[in-house]
Image (tube, rainbow, N blue to C red; front, side):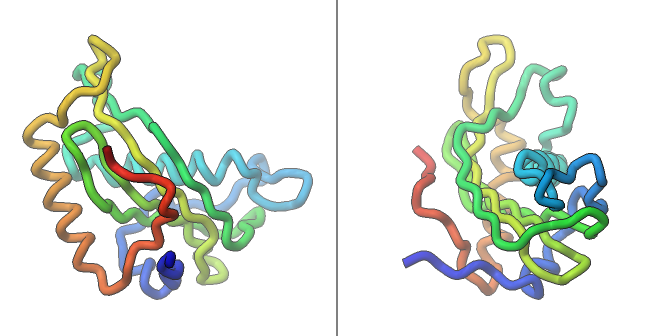
Length: 165
C-alpha cells in the first residue's frame, strides 16, 4: 500500500528551492499553471537542491551531467496565476550510476501540496554520453543527504513504478 502524501506542514520544514509566483505566461486555457511548467519548475528545484551535493548547474562544462531517466507525476491541487510556490526535495537512494528523488511543489499561498514528481536520474560522462559511476565526492555527498532525508518522520509516498537498478 502506498504511503499518503506528506502534509504541507511536514514539507515546509524542508529547504525551499525556486520560490516564485506563478507567472501569467505559464497559465493555460483552464486558468491554472500549464502541465508542462509543473515538471519544469520541479526539475529546476531538484537541480538547485543538488548543488549542495557537488552537482553544480555548470557540471556539463566539467564533463559530467545528470539526465532524467524516468518520472512519475501526481497532480494534487491546482496552482493559479499569482499563487506563490516553492519546491521541496527528498532524496531516497542511489546506485552506482543513478539516484531516486521526490520533488514536491508547494502552494505556499494556500498552504497545501500541489504536485509530486518522483524521478530517477542518471550520472552521465559527457565525453561518452553514457552513464558512469558517480564521482566519489558526489557519491559521498548524496549518501549523506539520503541518510539525512531518511530521518524524516514520514514515509516517502513513492509510486511503486520507479526503482533503482
